[in-house]
Image (cartoon, rainbow, N blue to C red; front, side, top):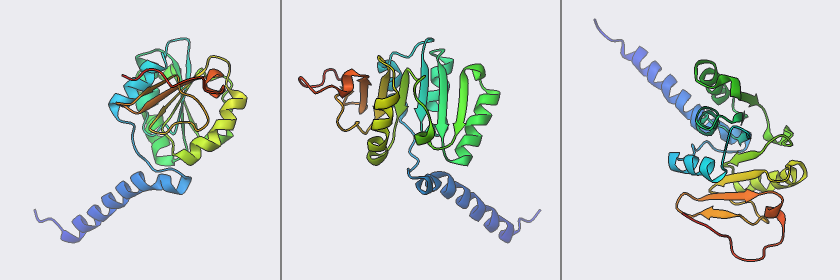
Length: 189
């Protein structure tokens, strides 16, 4: 059976276009797609001390590494927030066919339109500009004792409780994070 070279070429172009969209479409929504490395994701959940009592918001959930692990392993309620429609579809499929679906909510939309008052943990891997825009929203909506974990980009003006330099993860505890610094950040693993 002969393979039609034109059909193969069309298929390759479609696959390349789909991959390019998956990787670069986030730029249209204000952020690039870059998955959180596994070690950093595990450290984020560990440092935040996620437990069954928590409601974790993963801002820019991507394909759900933090969301589904928080729900499945830590038994937390997890809210994945994603603006890009293909990744939202992937998140919804994972929720439908995966474990712990009853503890996972997928929110398709702009994270700046959300209310974070029920969050006990907020996880981010956002660009610095987004972190600056997010800061006042967190300050006005987080409850006392809420934890914020960020991979790669600190929250300017906040003092981390811990900075794990190896995985580049910052842990903040509200409202202490917003208080004037009294000394160097602790920790590091």
